[in-house]
Image (cartoon, rainbow over the protein chains, first blue to last red):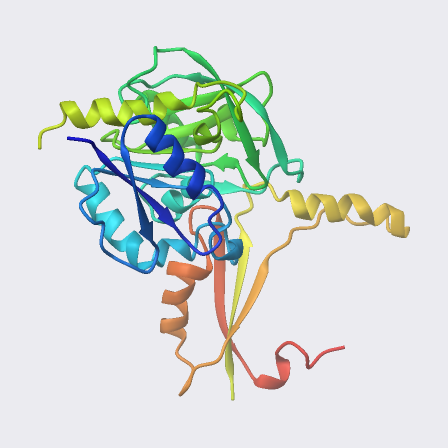
Length: 227
Length: 87
């Protein structure tokens, strides 16, 4: 049976269409979820896409966290549902306390939009099991508030537990502490990533096809996961 | 009607690039005696009934501030002290 992967649309989401397309190219069925509808419609995994939910008012992701769909997703994620937060989705996952730390204004204050090399460091997560440890990938980054911060104890714990999923190589685009581009929760089902794998799934539009691995990973994970 | 004012500031250890940018612009105004600038957010809350500081604190903790990176203070002010009354 084809896996069903939900993609949430918040007011102000931008990359929900590309995320749904990436899901389809990876071989799953994308299911569009609406922020105001608490139902997950039987999806096997969820992507929180990039954009500017609720206009980034107050703080990025702060208001989206309280959307009806998020209440359901937070509970389901604690129960093991694979959830990938990309860019604004990563910010929402931090605001919802599914991931530690916070994303703040880029240190240099400039919006950064470029193709970025990442090193995948954790391949045990639901969203990265298709990669090799240490594999370098090329994926677009585009953010104004992508500077990952956490207190030193949290950073040390993430490192010690192998929960730094990806790091920036060849220049840190936003000042993120310890060059962190992506992290995971303790169980490995929730991943937040600042760059955009959904923009690197087709030769026509992306700098590589490296982003596809995130979406094929979750399919692999779902096949192996207990029903 | 008194209002509740919530002041949200980045924690001292969190870098404030906006504040730095402002501080770096000050010499262009001929100001050379400012050591640092930090930027926060002031939120005014008006309750339908009596101002409720505990409720305001709860709102601040859950939504207005992100305790991972920000601190907040909550206080009551008379309405003539709120925004728009100055200048």
